[in-house]
Image (cartoon, rainbow, N blue to C red; front, side):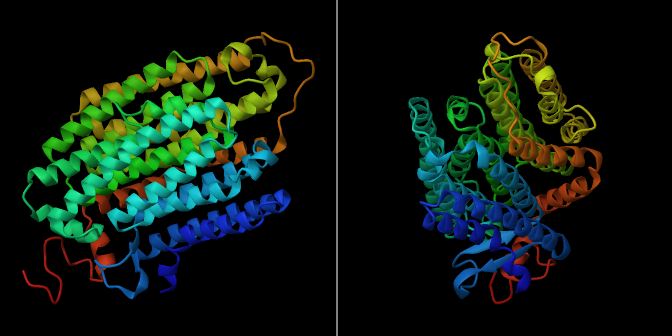
Length: 510
């Protein structure tokens, strides 16, 4: 039971801190102190859950004393646990960064409760064992993210929030229609129960339509082609701390949901799904990176690169081999850390130069050598340059593509990687190497809290790159559990792992 309680803390703790910071609405200093304590505690409970899962295997908890498949279920396997732990790392970095980036007016607009509410929704999405409750957590995440996106209430933010909200609501509608079709076909919303029932059902038009709607709904959340236009239209309007948490986590919830549903409920390796995911992965990689290389605003460029690298992750489902899912899991973890860090670096560049537009800045290599180093680490990692974390993620995926004879996917990924390197090199040349086009009246210092928070995530990136084996082994475990979800089902129903999918449990009739 003690181990099972570890499943609750990553959601319960941020909800508690959201309530506490709301109670301290008028005390900005107290909210900041509470936030520091909250992000440290969040990292602790997240890592504790990961180590628990590594020791025990998948765990589940049933709320309210209801036996599955009734009631609410939380489940953590290796994939969910490593994403919760990575969320804890990013929340710590962004939480520290926001101490300077988010000013008093943002606190009065509810930043801190919304921040912790978003963290709770993200972790709830990773841990829920019920597909309807996944929809609920998506909605909570949407509400919190809309509030954060418009926190400064500028015209650009309001415009970005409208675009963000409209397309995400479209995804929500598709999601709820898909759930109706699934429930009508299977009579349950519990994902472990669906994992036993859906594979035994014929692929009726309703079941197939539900699958396609889920791909579209999760594609909207993930920012995959062709439903990604809301992302570069909104992320650059957010405050830098908000953009960092968005870039690191929100799209990955959509990716996670796609991986969970199309390994647990549907078979991603089925020809029809393989074809769909192959098309999505290839076009997302290409269109995203092509959009990035023509941008002059750093955050818009990073937003398009974010879209492109969602295609790298979907490549794991397109190939759907153990090696591909291993590489995709590794890549998701790497990308959460690196992309959040790059958006924070963009905030630091704007703080010392007055803009994040490449045409208006320059000379930062001489005036801000520390910031130059802090930029290079995530930028080279995103490009896949060794020895940083991105190299290993891309190596695992390209190797999996060659093993599966998906040569053209490997080619597209390598091409997108080269163009990513070109895009970040443009940032380096324009922001750091060339002379500043406008001379500042006084040299601006890099805020120490910015340097510390960026360095924390940079150290994680370097650590993953230099000591990749533990994460590779964890990714192998996650891949094995995705391809054979018997241990996931067994954790929910309380049966030994010997119980295989499709077999009846004690007390059931065939």
